[in-house]
Length: 253
Image (cartoon, rainbow, N blue to C red):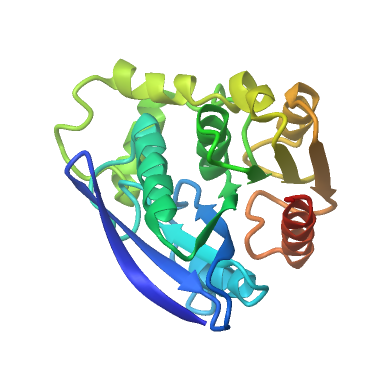
């Protein structure tokens, strides 16, 4: 496979990403865009390949894969802002649609946690997204206290500017706006798959059932016994991710 680094400018913020392409004779590829969650702030495990490893695993199955850092995360600029994350993802989709290697008939969002929430919201508003695989997705963010969350995000470096946000209530409104439970039904008749750990310690499994009940057809729900919130490193969860992507791709005529 081959890859190239990409920098997009969104709201005068640099959003960094990487596009992976299979090294074969095809000219266009079904495409998966991976959307990460809110960083935990825990020390990085040197043996953890992170999202680049996941991108390589999916690319090795014949997909073009795009990974990127939302604003406030990794090497991207800016500060964590949930509604801003939707604009970042919109810009990524715009970019992918400009690439000649991207098969526009299959552009799937694979989101984790808050990234899954943004994926659901974006897909509901953008018909260019052909399917969503939502892992550890919250139905809403009612469990998040804005004041304590803001302090935590400052401590872990996802909110970097002292004068951000200019209004806590306006910043918190972003989490209320991006409520997957309000939008997941609007993805139909496109496919949505929900994957959730039965022992998720951050987003209770009940969120997955609520989302599944609210989603329109066609839909899938896969729960992972014994799995917690972090599914990216869970072999059984990734097996379900690959299974869902393969199924979704086979449904595109």
